[in-house]
Image (tube, rainbow, N blue to C red; front, side, top):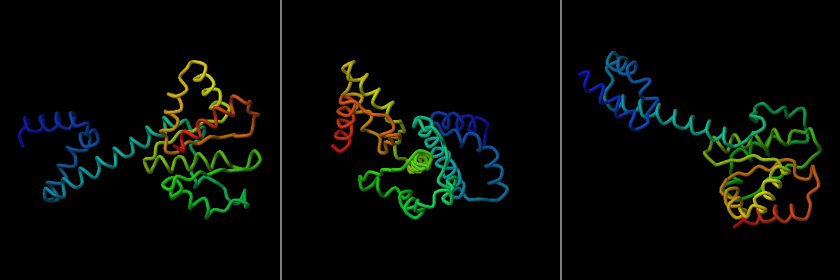
Length: 194
């Protein structure tokens, strides 16, 4: 293969934003020649690695934009610490079937039992399944809705919050909600049901 062809291949990979392939190409082509791989095997490997890399980057970007306070997984949760939590039920939630069915999940309990951990962990699972996910605590949410209402941007704010496939609202009921806050919260929930 001529140097001109390799240069053109690299330029095309850059234009196609195939960053991972650009990084692994030289070493992989040498190995493919040494192992006498056919062109289909070469392409299969290159595209599989590129797809895996794109999924990983999309997941990382989703996590970065989601606003999770902690990035703990379900594997990090100590179910023996909270025996009242049914692990099978949490595992069922991790299938994301409730999202597919348009159902809500509510974790109730006193502070310190792991609600935030479980909600964030399920959010990480949702992001792995490429569901848009956003985490916010209830007080911050109400403040953002009030500000948007005051600035006459409430419909836009509701639209943004309604687009997330999984919206995690933490600490509901931790602080009292005034009438305006309750009304704005209801508008958000109603918008998401639409």
